[in-house]
Image 1 (cartoon, rainbow, N blue to C red):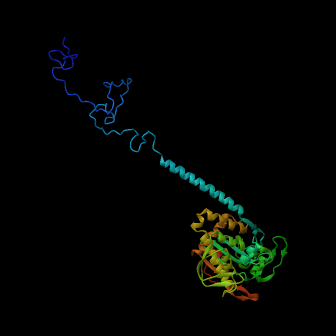
Image 2: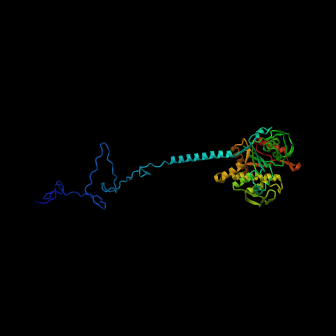
Image 3: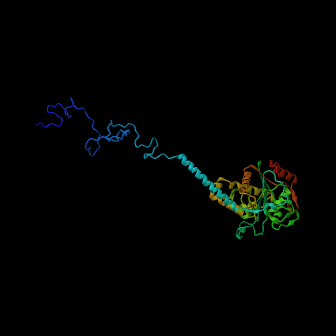
Length: 417
């Protein structure tokens, strides 16, 4: 018996397929084999897909050595992901437009909450203690808004040590140390200082606390009206002698002034010459420097040792207040909550205003003072004609009437001091 493999005949007429082929079997390509275990046998065909479905296509290339084909990559992107930038796990790409919108909305809401909270906090600290409704015989209102800004010598809140350090003394009560009218209108802002020694008429008035009527006391220094009945009589005296209606009143004492300067980090000033005087306690060298609260208070209070006396002092007060407003409104203060809130707190705790003053009115006053510093307004003293009895100053009434007319009509100021 001849032992031939199955399918082959002894006479050699077949080649491994039962002699069905007339010639040699064509060369067969061997699959790429992985190192390691050899396949146990031929790869079974994949199961037939359900009726009506297209068989899933396998990617051709080097990833499947048993997939058949020519062994080269067809260019198909592996791993899925839905195209360029797709997630390898099939997750959708982030919607950055929606995320940015949500972030902006959140930022706006936070800013709104902070702004509203700051407004109510500041409004609650404002001291509305002056009732202008009791001022009698008031002139007609003109165009624009007029503020009467007063610096008093009040020692309220100052300890004995503070009074010594600030050279304020221990005087009871309070008097006006500086007074100025600030007009805010469409033709720029105008700041007019009123020397406290101005020789004016104190008119009849009704006591703000007693309710009693008092007759006119005749000519006297302007600051005497404040000493008699405080802010209401001072407003009435200014209105009576100028014919200009005062819309709002703001007053700050010695202590509050020094606190604001310290809270803002000091105010930079260019001192024109060496200044030293015992009563105010000023001791400054010539040149540009930053004044702290104590030095600033001495600078605006100095009266003796100045060539022009009270007139020169009012100019120094205007110069300093404008510089203070400009520095307080700088981005380094406004955009820094660690500086802004202490400054606001120091000012609002000591600032006394009329009952109708809103935070918006206060902001308008503040920005107008800053505008004057930037050259967008006018700084001047009330026009003076000469001296009067008791060392007081007499106003130049023709010029005063022209100035008041221009302010009332909100016209550019053409009057000189």
